[in-house]
Image 1: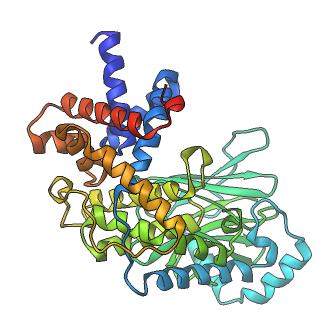
Image 2: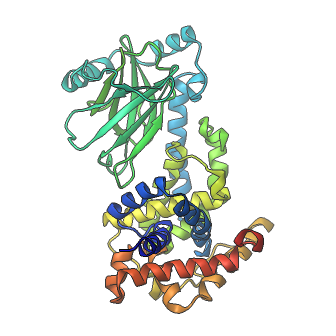
Image 3: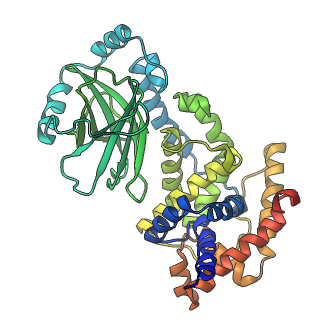
Length: 241
Length: 178
């Protein structure tokens, strides 16, 4: 294939890509090319706004009664959960006052959850997740260890007390379920954000808790809305210290 | 949107109220059943709430951004096979159905915007409009569309590109289109 033909094919792929019409494997290859090809990025920048506008062509329609309240009930539960973790736990970019944070957590997270997490942590293998590599200036990557999902991979990227989980190859948690993050400091465990994954099994979530001084970060499957205490054995963990 | 990222449920509810009808309309248009559309909307809006996806101003208005998330989630549902009654977008057209009543001037402006997009789509040569509708609203890949229409893959992608370029000429401001 000549360079000209190859270029034409890539430009046609750009149209299919902005319409979400490339199969997953072709989309992945296209995205790799996109990262290296400025002309292709320009073509995508030209066509994507048009594809985005197509959504407006669908007629608006009144949603079924109750849908909004069902969604808002989950949202409110999650908001309450985060609020219960302390007012400063709602902000990713602000480190909470530690004394106040610990005091609240010790009241909120009772002892019964510790055995569940301890069992899960043992099953996963505490101590496997150690610092693997460094990324940005102050970023540290901590590999995530999964119990049973051999396809799943992930890292917890920490930066000055803040942290973000990036995961790939993870199966969806199932209908009405979410993944929830837990931060363990000493024997205390704090509930953190919930998340799901896309059809490629990719997901990322910024943690709301400060991870400075944390021993472990764990992930469990919980009902929509998240839980105050883990209700299932963790499926993954990473060790910070 | 900053309030939502900080966990403000009330701010999120305002956004949901403002865009729910458009979001549900898109999900229903793509999945073909109200039950499947409900699942898609719940999945998309909770994803937005959980900040898995962050608002990117360069992608346009909050509305098109939210609809983009709904579109992606509907595609996920279609390709997972969880929506068994896959729509054949080309058979349905884009006519109005059970449309929500007008509520505000803003809604009227949005209707006008929607009419413009529909017109631009309707003005395309039928073979170009069809592949774009099958891809965007039907959630089909170009491989599936080629198989469905009995055309080569390159022809299908070429029609998509031509069609989007023509729509761009109709919808994008002249200075931006040049």
